[in-house]
Image (cartoon, rainbow, N blue to C red; front, side):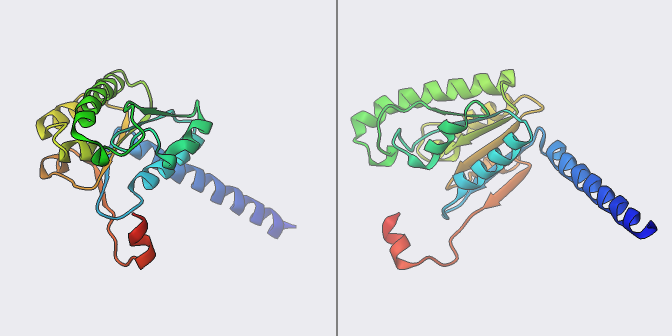
Length: 197
């Protein structure tokens, strides 16, 4: 009789430890800045996976996406996850920023600036627990946002908010502001995958 009870007790202890580890990990994330960058695919997907996990713990999540246009199917599923995860896009055209004619790019830059103002508001008010600014690094790369402006934007972050940034190129001037930096690169890629991208 003593052995089965010992097993049940041991199982309860294991579950309690696992809950403690998970809650400690969630607490550790609170207030950090994470950056996902590199030439490989999956930066937004990695950030999205983290968002889904944290929303499962009851955290409020917002994603502000830039440069991918309104026709980005990558995050369309997120619309179905509202209100736990909210997605905002400020650009009006369907295409990616890099493929737009110059006159349309100028107009979209105005929309992007409006989006950045919204990001600033969310950062200062702490409107959510986790904010993903998808392609913020791309805005720096395109010259839409200067490195100094990006640094000032990050300084406005509410102390408890988790901030996640993505993009291909990580400027040296942002490294010191991040708590965690993940570089996603291609080690090997099939020929047909290269043609698709």
